[in-house]
Image 1 (cartoon, rainbow, N blue to C red):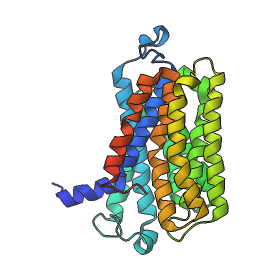
Image 2: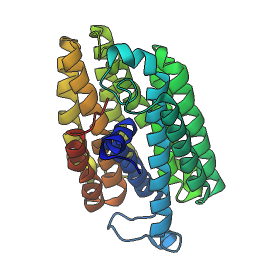
Image 3: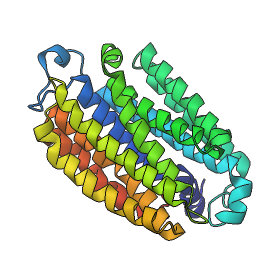
Image 4: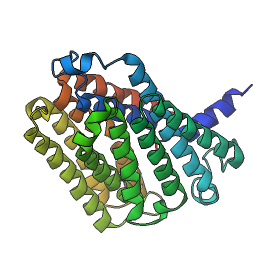
Length: 306
């Protein structure tokens, strides 16, 4: 039986506050799929296909995929973290590297197997995400450009995983994945200076990319189903929450300011998902997704985000 200290160490590896943001991706994807209408009632076309169980299975899948990914990140970074982040679970010897590898691999397997219970497309998306996660953890995160793109693809695929609750919608709405790709790439670019300080040019590039995400979300108003006026308060909240700390970090790229910007950026993935969900399924559904934000922030007080 695990002791309390050991159990906490395993939870630290999984970044529980971050996993909540992955859940928000799924909820936003479900909203975009059309299963839930703008009146927060099931749409006639989706009512017969929507069940609560597939949603729960997709939430389990993303828990495994995201949790496994961040655990394996620490496994691959064990030697580097021994110098730069000695307080983490593996460098501090509260969890062995082998235990971390077993946990991370098991979580990824749960994520893929769970997704296949929804549809072959969902399982394929989860399998691709699993491969992209390992590629990022082992190789691409050390590359200035491929790393941010790789991480963005992981989050964009997670949004598509939510949409795959109705598999036919994925081919229609694939372009929605571009928004989290750009946003996560911006956060990843900003995060490069967490330990030693950053580069102002990269900071301002990240700001430009976040601004592009805001503009891209507003442009969704061109879609018949996306109600930009309903989503606008959520878009405004996202903007005023994310841009100020990014601007401060870009102007003075000190490690503390960069870490704060990255933490805000990661947790604000929920705000991004809320503005997507509100536009597609109404402000009430957007609020449901938004409620995950204070939950994630509260958990972040006890478990590291970066």
